[in-house]
Length: 102
Image (cartoon, rainbow, N blue to C red; front, top):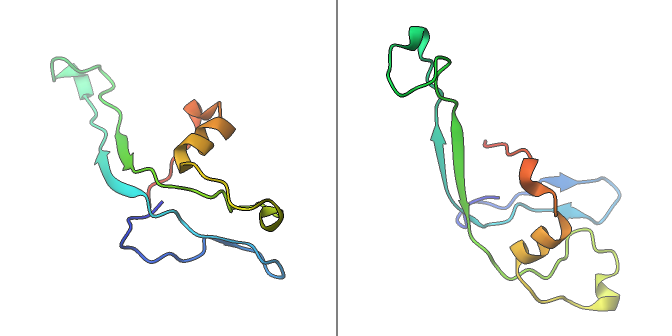
């Protein structure tokens, strides 16, 4: 995912095939929270090992015709709907997925 104003360079492209996946321009914001170690429990209200870091990512939704990896799209035609509705339907166990922030 990238911000709508960023360049859309292919993330995945295989030589000899006509498939290229671009990042989706749906990124609204990214907020990063760094870790804090609480050595000797000197700060009240925090665990002795401190506070773990985290990241919050805000994404928008957009109409999506489901073109990625669909080899029979020309025969079937475009499908209407939003990206996140289709993504959640296809990934029911997404609670423990990894997120990389570059």
